[in-house]
Image (cartoon, rainbow, N blue to C red; front, side):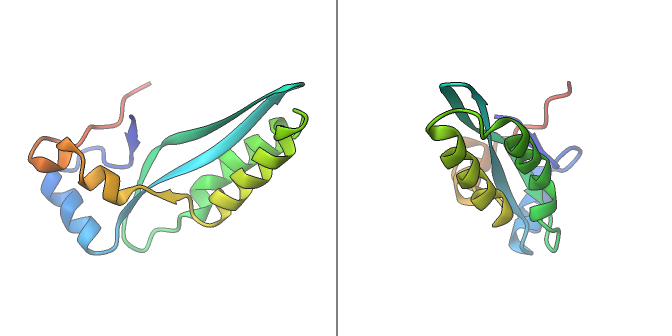
Length: 114
């Protein structure tokens, strides 16, 4: 999975930042096409200590607002769930990332370039 925000950081720098309060989060978005609705997670974002989490999720909430409502019955439900997750600062996945094989001495995956 792609991790955004750790470009150029070493494993030790990431660990130090997490100890100071940094965290890894995922946001959620919803897209509907009539009777089909898709609820998907974003890439993983690394937030440094003191960095706000809600602002990064606004784009995903906007996408859900524009394209999520239209599927019946799950569109409105998944759209509201996406708002809930994103406006609470995303889903914290720091523990999962730190417990992954990457945290056991291997480099943490860098963000892929588009």
